Length: 535
Ligand code: NA7
Image 1 (cartoon, rainbow, N blue to C red):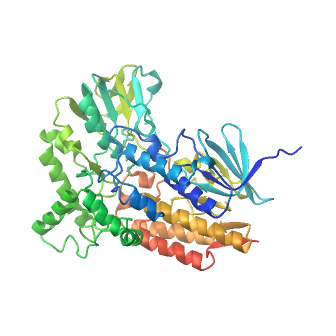
Image 2 (tube, rainbow, N blue to C red; image 1 turned 90 degrees about the vertical axis):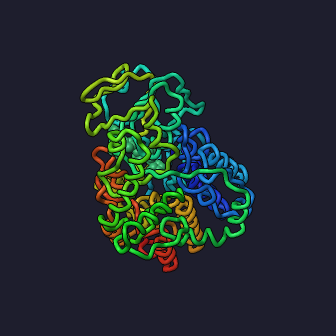
Image 3 (tube, rainbow, N blue to C red; image 1 turned 45 degrees about the vertical axis):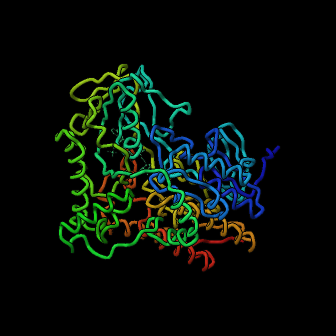
């Protein structure tokens, strides 16, 4: 007898900012939707990343949904950059306000999604053994959600407590009186290190690659400023949608090499004082495309580090010199560099003395042993593809997505994959995603997918599938755009370089969110050009 399984119009995997909005949109069209979420609460990234100091590096009034004018007018943000708890409160509010929770199944990890060619539907199975069928399968699994602990042997022998910043205990961690080791100096390390240093008896930071970081200049949000932006929200949001990074900022008109050093320093200082991810990057037209221009910005930031850190040797070790400014995602910090002036904080450069082993009592580098009560891995994620390839996704002919992507991800517009009909990826590889204000990119993808689904249903199409030709052309375009910049020169997670054995491919699209949106809109306007539609 054939097993009868529950049927939905759509299954959405993940109940973070993208999955929740996808649910809202599809339900609004009258579709039956099931959302699976591995966590025991909604929120995705902001559910898991609860490490001390966790904060968004896009301003709160930009990093918020724009789809509901009432929501954006009524919600009051308290700080320029929102903390993780505040963003999670916001997401929970959205889930309640739009009555989303009733279609979300929590604590349920999706194990596989298999396309059935006979009936053109996806069978989605969870680790707990539940199986459902849906016409559409939408991966809202996040770009930075599969955390990565370093490949250093011996972790299982460590007798203290250890944590990954991306899976922080909900009850928090008290480091008071403890000897703590932090591995990793990306955004999570840079945000958490100053706060862990305040608590710990002693903190040792293990750094492989120094990072560019600029002061966030975080502050409480002035109610008058907030009201002023709210009055202009529609225009402001529209400008964000049409911008390069999803954050409306004036665009530069001059090359960094056209002006003299004093003028450049004034511009960089203004960017530095602004406390924004993009202001130094966007001071000049060529920062991200010309190494000599980039060097001027990089040296400006290095000189700031040299001013802030008292010990010259430590300062030099903290100065990034292996990648151009901006080619690894820069960080916004609060007291990061000054933390290394504290008597209870040491920096270990693991490029000089590599980490060799985790021991029962701590860590061993090539030259000595360190004793710790607690270890913190701020070691990042298998970015952009990890969450997708960790699910057994099988398309036509039983082909596995993981195998299809063995040489690097291939997707059309980062939205669909040839051979995987009716599968959509929100902020997938080949879309601007991690090179943008995620909220702007998420809303654009969700709305595009929602309109596409409405179109298919209205016209009676059973499936939509990217064609190989359109996908090849888009993948090539994404590479060409990347190659016009300095991004591919860095060993970054944009390139898959932080995961052993992962192919080196520049995964996000650098053409800009406005340009990309236009391309997606054109594709839709031309009856989904580059996609094959079946009756
Ligand atoms: P990131 O930015 O990937 O940072 C991870 C850090 O951990 C980075 O400094 C890595 O050095 C370091 N790392 C990773 N593996 C090791 C090993 N084996 N040994 C030593 N050091 C290691 O992750 P985050 O969580 O900080 O931030 C991710 C994004 O979230 C961020 O960009 C924002 O968009 C928000 P590496 O640079 O690889 O040499």
